[in-house]
Image 1: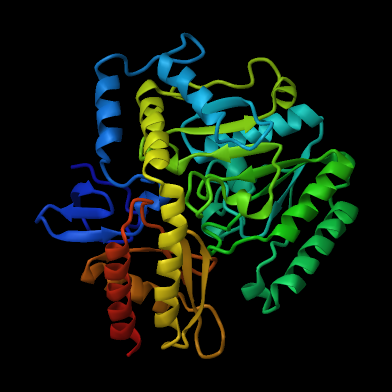
Image 2: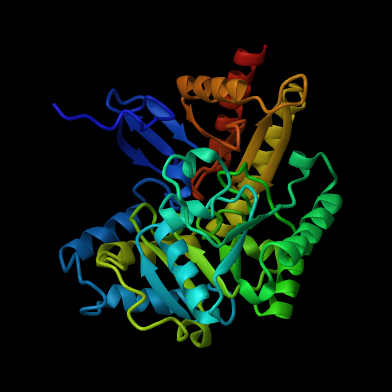
Length: 417
């Protein structure tokens, strides 16, 4: 009898049978509040009726129309619609299936466009699990260990993480920018540096937001040296942070934007966007793939855009995020082991540290597991797994936020007393 790989580790023991909105039901019909959203994927919730209808209708027309062989209407319409939400100047798109694939496409584009071999990433960033993407990932060794050698040409610079350094955000930002200059002076000269790759909010790295001055510093250095700024919006895009793009909080002006996860409400679809001038510098034949821009996934993405717009989900993300963050802070105020509640919109992390101030993954996992037993599904992140993250679908209601906060409070109390 075949079984799943024993190396796969499940965050919960739930066997999901059906879902609606932020609610999941197991095979015994027990209800859970799903504040994982498939790691930020089900942006419009489980089985939003408009997404379901769009996918069902498209399945009956054509499922796979490989887009370097033939075109299909959902793809063409999606490109047009995304033009209305992408940052100004990004008017050319390439589609793939996953965030890792899109990151690798962005890497290939920036190297080909500049003729430069190196890229600079920022400590704590997660960009994927494939070889090139893993080589650019520094949020944890589990993503990059055991299959060396990794891709060369990647250099790492600090991210302005106040909690990690124990500094105010301004000091952390000063340090991050000065160290970036040091990297450019000592490890990768600007003439060899194709791009900066950065997340607006560290995802797997612990839900740590960047800030406006840091992004302004990246843009200034990119412009001064002909370096391209690639903003990884795989997890932060499509309203997750309370603005359509996470970089919108910081006045980001990317040269390349990478998106996936919430783009199609659970269907596999990812993309990179760049200007026409930049995209035409990619080498002929360097972009392609069998399943990219699948017709059903594109139809689901169009429905996702409709739902986000018609139901005001970006604003709901901001409003419900404020509500959730305030509720989580009230819990943290009663327990000194929770040292930080941080994030933007519906992307919020709770950091656990022990009495010596060291990361405490044991307690974080214990609380996450206790919450699951009580009916609230959550995930951990951070370099040590010391952060419990809340990422509900953007359709979450005020009552569901209150219910989740109550379950969280009970779980924390049960573990910590």
